[in-house]
Image (cartoon, rainbow, N blue to C red; front, side, top):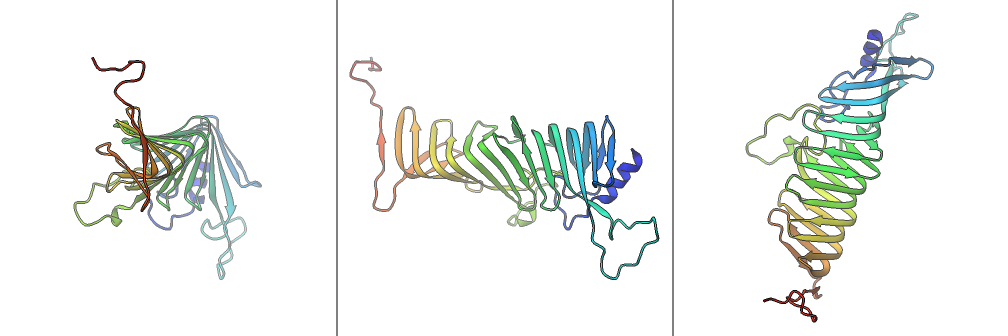
Length: 299
């Protein structure tokens, strides 16, 4: 097993630039498994079975089975010929380009956890895709769940939930949609001012940088303490703490309903405001304090 671990470490391609996210950076990937590791030379694949674990930097992937898929590196023009039986891992050798995880998959960093039934990490694109029946990403500030898949795009600083995606914050604010896309920015792209402390290695894309915005598409629903706001699309801007929903917008508050083409929601105060098109009007239904049969009539 020791020789195979060393071999896998040498096969991981070097990162082009530092990215504190997932498995695309951070040196070699160490793989261990309780049931053993099988290396298939003709197929260029290594299979770790039984409580398998892969670690790179500050990120750990746990699964019933891990599959590392490899490919041959091209021979560089003008490279010196190697002696028979020898190899050069940086020239004409092999490299891991894809890591698959199957069964009880967990992605762990110092602060966050993502779970699913299956996962695929594409090292070339620096993207992890989780699928399964109980997809969840838990961070110190929010929980993201999705029906179809959760994605990490580290180079794009983007996290995606697809299929009945829901984000719930620690203060119980809720944003849902068919698709939710969260964008972050690097610390070095922040405006001048006091800089935050260093991020833990391997932090996920929803928390590794400063949250910039969340985009929501399809059957969007936003809940505050007092209101439920629905629309076709929406975007939340972290800098202003304002969310705007557009397309068939409905605001429900204590039984009252307002309808219009767009609405702004202050996520900090919970105040929602319906917006009319230029020259247009908004409509609403307000529930009176009493009904015809006398119910809810003040005493």
